[in-house]
Length: 62
Image 1 (cartoon, rainbow, N blue to C red):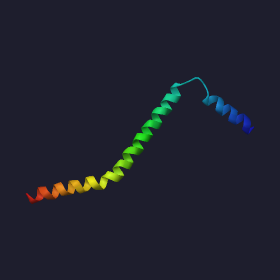
Image 2: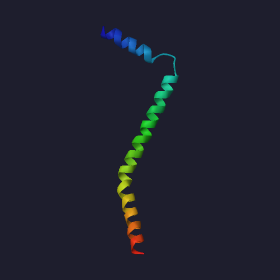
Image 3: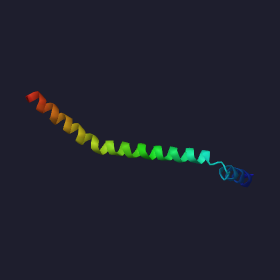
């Protein structure tokens, strides 16, 4: 029973339909780009925040 289920599942994924594969690839690329952006913001966020605070302090002193 499990062997039949696995073989049926593999047969579905090995079909000649490449449109679904392309969609999955685009989805994975989008997820990877989103993860990279989130990590970059986590590391650069405090630096950018400090930069804006320095600009704000300088503008208040003028």
